[in-house]
Image (cartoon, rainbow, N blue to C red; front, side, top):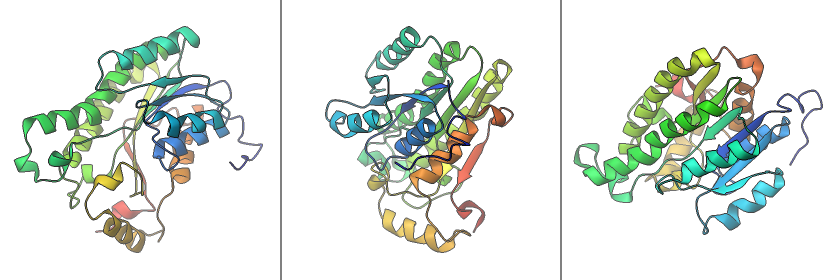
Length: 262
């Protein structure tokens, strides 16, 4: 990993944060974890299950993660266990990055109007409610303020072909960000939805015709370039700085300007 400029290497020194959602070295969450670490923060890392652990554990070691914990938000009690461990180890928390979403194939692959209730509920549970619950658990640990991040996508605000029910879930997630920002703002807690341009991640691989979407983004974005996990990571890390303390409650696009083009 490239060493950061000495002028920025300590901008998050002394800060402690949690990153949820690293699946492998192509994950947006990994780009963010690297950036937080490069700016001097201590970063706790979660992994989904034992199958995922071998892919995530080497990455956690790369950033000297002091805590490496299992977290499947569909398993009762696991989210609470993670925050209990952080409370025991650190006693406080400065930032949390929530970068998880899931929809069963039968729900994601069909029309929104046809989605069955179980698929809808699972999609909303993982992709939206888990962030709300994470914010609830993080709040008492952010004793001196802090920052909550979650990952969205342009399909929350406009119809993107094949994004389907995930667009509905992301729209709910962005609304949750606004309400939570309003509720926690008096405590100095900022809340951000980060909306990267399309990226070739494991999560995106479940979206039909995703390669065509990547090509379209590359051709139409004003920057004429696809975003990388490093681009997303550094922009997100900036928002964790004290200098960004008055930025909150919005969806922030990191997509080379793609979202402004019809």
